[in-house]
Image (tube, rainbow, N blue to C red; front, side, top):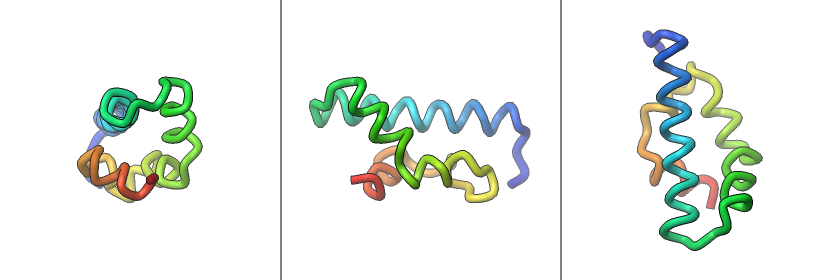
Length: 67
């Protein structure tokens, strides 16, 4: 992807935070469980690789692969 490392890290963090917020606020999961669900997922491992381009996707779209 043609994005700087700094921009990639920022976008990845924003998408991750939004996914956790959706799980806690809309689906009622406790914060600790929501964090664990996102960070322990196979999707998050792929999200950490800038080459996948997943950081450009919607948090709701990405959550559909976790749930």
